[in-house]
Image 1 (cartoon, rainbow, N blue to C red):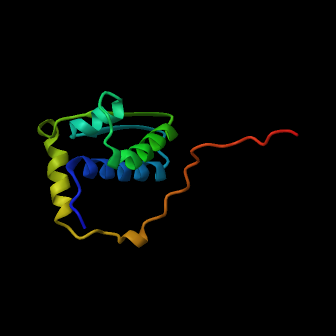
Image 2 (cartoon, rainbow, N blue to C red):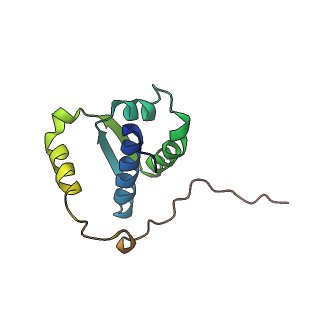
Length: 117
């Protein structure tokens, strides 16, 4: 298995966090990311690499499912508490195994209206 790039890791972390927030019934979300490329790509000021298109589209669809959403860049140095918590979390055994987590409810990305014939 190839190692993921820092931007891919940031995409996956954001996607996971957005799904977790959605499961709790959150309607408004503001996510702070410490990867400037991720924030720029989601903001439309930087092109998305082809290998990240799938993750990008999943995140955009999920962000659109909220009533209000925003992704903002916040340098890691300005959010030291979150960086420390992330490092500590990586050193611990998970409280729940992946199979114990509730499956996210399906997210309807579009709907069609039957045409009258």
